[in-house]
Amino acid sequence: MDIKNESTDHQNASEQVSKSALEPLSNDALNAANPTRKKRRQATEEELNNPFHGVKLVQVLERLVAYYGWEYLGERVNIRCFKNNPTMKSSLGFLRRMTWAREHVEDIYLEMLDEIAEKENS
Image 1 (cartoon, rainbow, N blue to C red):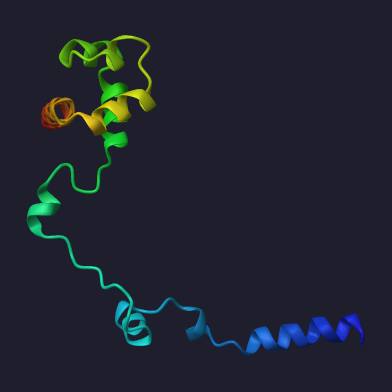
Image 2 (image 1 turned 90 degrees about the vertical axis):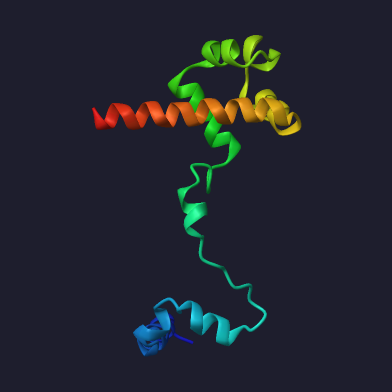
């Protein structure tokens, strides 16, 4: 078989694919094609207004460290993983285990969001 013929055959086959076959399917079409597909529900207004909606703990901590720094966090929340050789890994592990510490960090995050909003409105 000739290499030129193979490449020409491949080009002809790819040209025959219609553009509609390349466009993404809508959710309705996907659900009709696969009835066992998990249907996603829309977020409620309450969820959309929640500042923690769609934000992971690692993102909260990264934003706090970037905005305030480890020293400030160690002063506000008296935990060793913020004061002595702080790392993301140790802090995340502790915050996931200790609900009270996570709640303190979440309160600081909400205060930070308020400060940022006030600066933008000024």
